[in-house]
Length: 161
Image 1 (cartoon, rainbow, N blue to C red):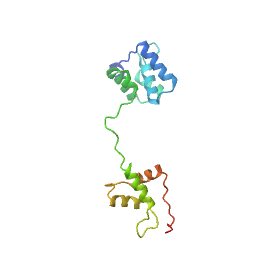
Image 2 (image 1 turned 90 degrees about the vertical axis):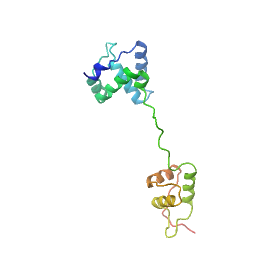
Image 3 (image 1 turned 90 degrees about the horizontal axis):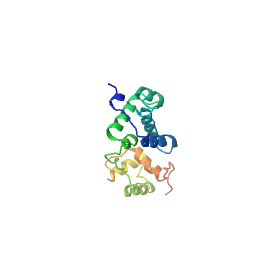
Image 4 (image 1 turned 30 degrees about the horizontal axis):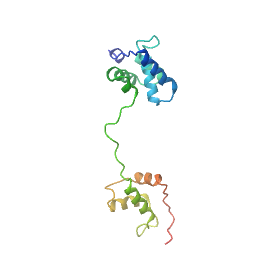
């Protein structure tokens, strides 16, 4: 038994009008428009609907599992969850360098490099941040991104002292 027969999509005329508006106006996210088109094509209650998962997948250039998943979401959870992206349960990982730590990094870049070094390199900044206890561990790329965000360019010229 395929997913298309297990989870049937039957739209009311109001739901169909809303989905057609979403699919046509182009002001929504691409995924929302795609999901609206999938539901419109899968609708059993409309003569233009009732496509199989394979037909919908081929017409919209998506995997048949995507079509089956959208059908299932609509049948079990409703229209809102079938159209919109899932909200994250866990917040994203907090930035290792933000706020006062970023200010300290920028101040460090303005200071003289340690003895034996002519300029600050990313690796040198990483080791200095770890030595000063600002971070437990951090990669060079993270430091580079923070510097870029604040418009800091590391110069390879000798500092005039």
